[in-house]
Length: 331
Ligand SMILES: [Zn+2]
Ligand SMILES: [Zn+2]
Image (cartoon, rainbow, N blue to C red):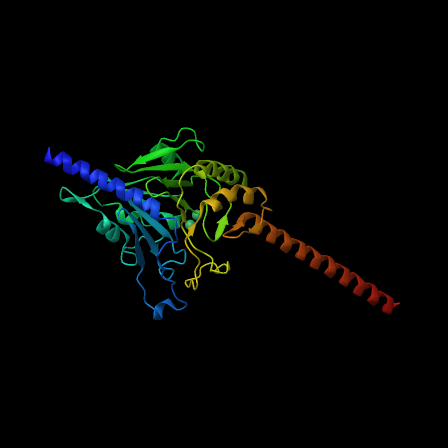
């Protein structure tokens, strides 16, 4: 009896805390992320920065010096298990102590750490290389990242229209397919905090499109999903812009004056329109840039071919004229 009252109390406190987290989380995140360095060798920095968002939610960031992708990873803790969203760009625990950090953050229950699920927003390597660090740990389940494995694990029959749920114990996280950047991209919505973990689907930086039609359809579905839900922040996997909106060069290890990580519900609602108007190559918006690398590459290739054709045409003309001049002189 005593135990069950204590249990009820714990649940009540946990729920109250969760509700409180949502109520107080609409303001800006109170964290200053490490900016990396121009010369990382002469400016040693912590490889991984941990920000405690609330008692059950942690935001982790890989230092730009450790990996220019500088991925953000997210740890959500429930009563029965925890969920790590993305494992980042680095497999070597000597360079990136991810597994040790994450297991150190997990609450202990009956003498052991809470079981952990390692999931991914999508299959690009910078979101899953850290899986290797968890592979041999007990009570860790790694969600497959291939298309078939993702659908099977989440039991999403109607891809991409279905919605799956991960129950962490007193905390249910929705999993929504969002292909377009990557075929098996998913985003996670945590009703407890109102946080939408958007991966590379929506972030303050380059939103790179692989499949325009799939991306636009995903944006419409996600916008419809969040429209009537209490969304506190959209948290993506990278920040690639400074406070003025300028993009850091690809591969930059230094992020001075980095803009805020969090995007708003308005950004999620504006994405379908931005994609509908996308010119197929590059478009700049208030809080992100949309780009289609393959189209840009094809356009650059076409420009290079045109330049070569013009050069060849000019050279043929030049030698013809020269031959004609020489023939005139010979006569
Ligand atoms: Zn990606
Ligand atoms: Zn990424």
